[in-house]
Length: 78
Image (cartoon, rainbow, N blue to C red):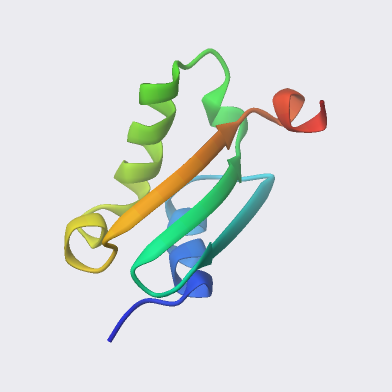
């Protein structure tokens, strides 16, 4: 069984406080827009690591690919 975009969204939201979160995908490949104050002052790789930490083992076991845009609330408003 492949995860749905809503399921992936719930995984991210459970592990990372987000002010905006969109996830689209086909069950294997997903695209996400993730807006979180936790990204303030972090480089791109650090932001992605926060998302991967929220997903945990699901990234290896359930989700084949995840493309993400990680933004602070200020960046998202622009």
